[in-house]
Length: 494
Image (cartoon, rainbow, N blue to C red; front, side, top):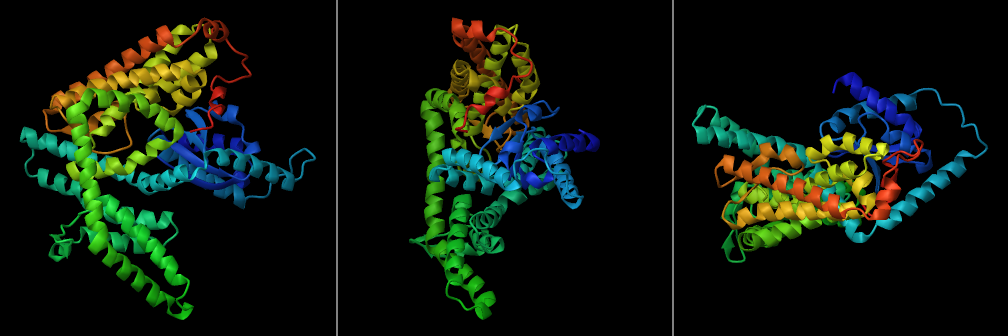
């Protein structure tokens, strides 16, 4: 997508979310532009979904516009620039109605709070904060993961031996210091000084910890990994806040950072590293045994339940687990299985397309969302097609379960493999696959799992995804004024 097209997309979105003055915050993740809004009532959802390049919208703690991987990273800076330009321009004329600005703001705040209240359970809020720690690391994980895969391929083929050490250094550098980045992001997310969180987490990867004994064992650099870094930085945040309650302002710049690093560092060395190391080892052992002994059944359960986890936002709890597995073995064995849920979703969407030949609006939505679905971006299909229809969401889960069982079965037979990074799925996961078997075998098994997910998701939806009443009601072209993706406003659980 060219720069002009990125700016055109941003320019089309801005007035539909209420203009620059209605935007309070801007951020993006792998696929979504996340916008904070002053007044939710000023957003035109239907028009937004019709903007070329917009794959769907989701409302959670922020208003989220699905643009897809790659595109969102290019559109967001243009959107930010337009917002800044709009705020510096002359103020717009008042809206042509009698409602006061204060009333509009109060209405928007009420709508926003009502929506947030349904999703703001303590557990979900904690998961969001954990996700906010790890999501910014995903681009580096993807880039280094692909380079690691390329390096492994060159090593196996014996090609370019002079380049292999350089690629190994490039791929491994980030992972060797990932604990520092986790510590930095943790402190920032929980209200501490980010650099202090990074400083405490850096203790975990310092080679000199090998000279220290804790719990009768000699520590090793990296012990505890990202879990230890998260715990250490979180402790640093609370120590820092405690210090600021009693340290005089004149001494704060000297005493607070010193005590924060000292106290948190000692607790990390003589407690957290050991405990987090045991937890990390338990996670790795459990994942390996789960797939080695109950691979097919475990894959069926994981693949079948992942779409509901995404819908509820609970999939964020898996991010630290994925990162821990990657840190331990170089790849996460769970992600290829969980990616099968997206395959079931794609198969179900194709079946909906075939079963409703006269519903032009819904078929248009499916056609526009399928390319992103094949690349692992499932939100447009979930919130625009299967979830509002109900039964197709269940049959999509059946397809995901079948694909997960297929991949899990081969894990049980000894062909274990995983993804060297988190974030991508679907076809986008192929460059990130790694394992102990021949790369060709690994790719073939993953492709076979996708094929099973597509086929079973299609068949289950085609034959069991609709009642006769549903076919009668849905197999007509709805009112053109009502966009096909409008039902995505229904699910408030995601």
